[in-house]
View 1 (cartoon, rainbow, N blue to C red):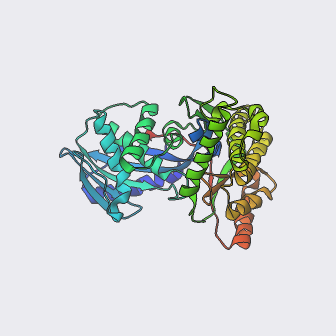
View 2 (tube, rainbow, N blue to C red):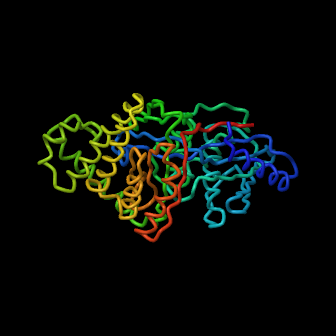
View 3 (cartoon, helix red, strand yellow):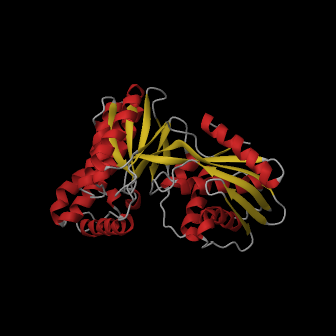
Length: 394
């Protein structure tokens, strides 16, 4: 079901589709972006994450072709691409690089034996690009749903998410985890999704239907250190596991270490490695605790856990930055904010705050002003509730 903003976007898409292709779009798909409420840098340690789909999405309007080609017009870039589904390859043309996600899903779906004969489509997204809200996963999942629909097939959402991950890893060349695709495909209105990244099992966790919103704030800070520091953090986590195996032989990842076990053995670890392990182990526990707090409708406890998560990310995992810290501090200064933390890889990107609806107006006025005063940058706010995962609309 489309929200009011999506309805307006689709009206424009239908008009553009008719102008471009001289016929009406027969099928419409949507897939949402996402925000992670808690559970940061736990995924590559076999841990838990707790994302929610957001009311920002990728929409695709399409009709079938019979010549084995896909023609796509991206409204965000005002640019078209045309490619054959036989022997599809990534493009290096900077004007068409957005289409690699579309090409990737055509490639992976054909490998799965899902037969379609081509497509004309118009694509439009309002998930902010480069902000860590998973516009790429939304594009992959929506594209996969399009090709499945045009083949007259039905696909299990878990399989759709796994194929989207495979497409991004093997075709686009980005070694992503499973969280983004899972929540885009499996999101549920007014729910977060507790995902076990080891077993790939998941559980819908209720969010309040009224009274509180998620507010995402983009720092507008370019994230320059993410790749190199990510590799360093991952290596430090692996080092922690290698050392802790001497004490706890049965472990294979930090996911297997309890807070108590880490405390008992922390003197075995070098300082920085101990800090990284402490973040991952405590963050896993916080994620499970937050799922329980949401089920109990204990928003005060949720906020405490979010605040603790940010402090851990800033000090133990050392992936925050001045801009993120300033934005979190500004959010926490507003009465009616339960908790605020950085979300995503770090060194820029976004924060997530749980905000009482009665405080939204004050938050929207004061937080950007405080942030501008302290950093000289403009914070872009997105107010959202948890949205439905990918679906065929028409």
